[in-house]
Image 1: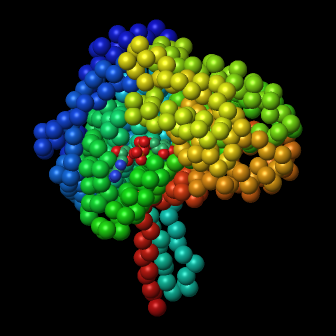
Image 2 (image 1 turned 180 degrees about the vertical axis):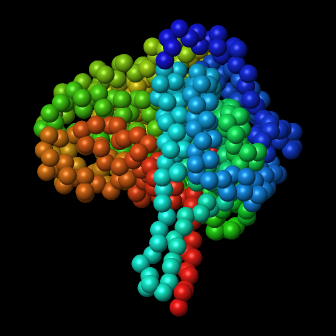
Image 3 (image 1 turned 30 degrees about the vertical axis):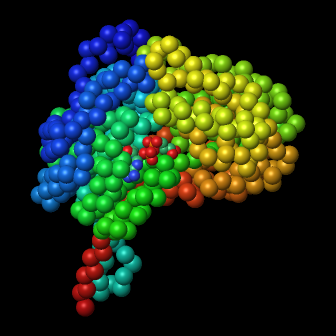
Length: 496
Ligand code: NAD
C-alpha cells in the first residue's frame, strides 16, 4: 500500500455512485425512492442510494436476459471473455484505493485490511477466473463406436447474486467472476448496509468492455429487492451468501417460483481446537486471536469457539487475552489500525445482547464486553472473551458475528471432536497439533467444508470454500464454483 495516502482527504474527494446500474447505465429506482447509506465510522450519511424493488429487479432481469439471448457475451469465445475480464481486473487494481475507501467508509473495516486484503483478493479472483476459462475442456462419453456423445458445459443464463456486507466486494466477486467468465448475465444485489463498492465496480466492468445488460447491480433491501430476485421467474440460478435464516428463504422462493437452482453460502460457528502437543503454541494463540478479532469477528468462518485441551487451558487463554489487546478498535482510516468499526448499530446491539446472554447463562467474561469510542458517533466493541463456556450456551451455538470468543475446555480428542461437531453449522474447523496421525484422524471426523491444520489461512482462490450442514451447499472459489453457473448438455449422435 502507498503509505503516503491521506485517506481522509481522499474520502472528501470521492464521487459516490448512488444509483442502480441497469442495462449499462446508472438509473434511479422506478419509484424514485432512495435510502440513506450511513457510515459506521461516525454515523455520517455517505449517500442517498436508489432503493430498488420488484419493478427495478424486473428491469434488471429483463436487461440481463436480453443481453444473454443476443449472445453479446454468452457467445463470445472463452478467449475473448478472458481478454475483457483481464482488463476488468486491471481496472479494479488501478482503482483499488478508491474501492478500498468505499469499503472502509461503508462497513467500517480498517483501510489497511480493505486495501491489502479485500482489494487484492478481489483483483486476484477476477484475474484467476479470466485465466481459467479458456483452459477448461468438455467431455466425450465412452459410448459404442457407432455413436458420439458430447457432454458440454453451457452458461446457465441469468444469474441472481445476493451478498452480505462483511466483505462487500469480495463476496460479490466470488459470484460475479466465475459467473461472468462462464458466459452468464448477472443481477447483483449488494447488502443494504454496503452497496457502494458494487455500484462502482459495475461501472468498471462496463469500461472494461463487458456489454450493457450483462452486469447489473440493484441496491435495495432484502425483503423487497432480494426477495424479488429470489422469486423472479426468469432468473436461472441464484447464488446467495448470507445468514442461514435468509438462505432458507431462497429455497422457498425457488420452490414457489421457477425451481431456479440455488446455492447457499451461509453462517458458521468454527471450532478452533488446540492440543497441548502443538509445536508452536504462540502461533496457535495468534491464530486464535486473529481468527476471532479480524474484521471484528464479522467473518463467516470466524474462529468463534476456542476448544483448548485442559492441561494448557490457563496459559493458552492468558496469551490469547494478551493478544486481544492488539485488536482494540481504532480509527479505520488510520493505516496502523488493526480493527475498525462494526457494520452498524443494529449489529452492535445484537452482539452486545449476546454478551449479556453469555453472562446470564453463567460463562465468565474475562475481557471486553463493552461498546467503546462512543464519542466518535460510530459503532465499536472491545475484543471480548468468555471462559468456562458450555457448548449448550447460546454464545457457543449461535453465530454472533462479532468480536466475541467462547472458550471451552476438553480432555480427550474424542471429546473435542464431539463438541466441535455438536453444531448446526459446518463451514470450517481449525486444528492445532504436532501429531500427524491425530491430525488426519480428526480432520476426517470433523464435519466441515474446510479443515485447517496448524494455520488459520484455509487457502486462496485456488481452493473451494463452502459449508456442510446448515452452513449451506455449493462452493465458492476454485474451478468447482463454475458448476453453479453452468449446466451440462448431452448431445448424442448415432452413426448406425
Ligand atoms: P443476511 O442474511 O441478513 O443478508 C444477506 C443478503 O440477503 C443481503 O443482501 C440482504 O439484503 C439479503 N436479504 C435479507 N433478507 C432477505 C429476504 N427476506 N429475502 C431476500 N434477501 C434477503 O446476512 P448479513 O447479515 O448481510 O451477513 C452476515 C451473514 O453472512 C452471516 O451469517 C455470515 O456467516 C454469512 N456469510 C457467509 C459466508 C460464506 O461464504 N459461507 C461469507 C460471508 C458471510
